Image 1: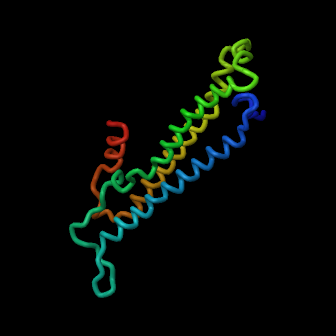
Image 2 (image 1 turned 135 degrees about the horizontal axis):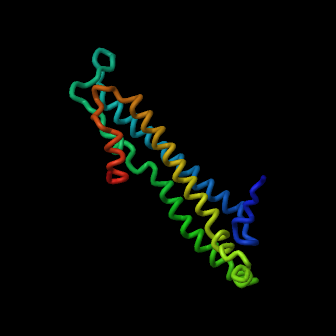
Image 3 (image 1 turned 90 degrees about the vertical axis):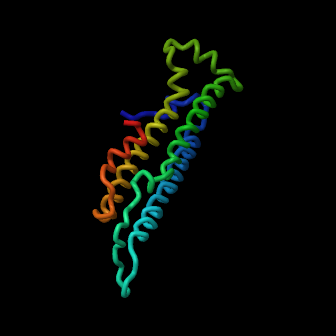
Length: 168
């Protein structure tokens, strides 16, 4: 079974172009999130000093919380998701252009056809952005734990993460 993406976008719209722009947005968001690695590197190197040409851990040094190191590096995925609201609006008003296909869409036996064509691609894009951000969040969390010396880590990092994002 193959899924035809054209069945989930307004008729006559260049969905390949839209998908290209969505993919570019997601790629830019991913590249921007790599800034976390630079932040982590800076914080990590601040934990050490050089004595006799050897790196030595500074006594009492601690790594900032993961949430602080992460900062706003995943904000690109949120921005892509917000752009999808504009895409839904564009898809809806696209039906009013030229041939006025809005009248055809309203006469179809499936009353949800208009909604399906306006919302499907943006909704799929939002879900993709959320999954990519969640994957990168978990990946970066693993890197943070792997890189940070145990003596420098403050406890309850996982709890702090969810407390900030979910208020739990």
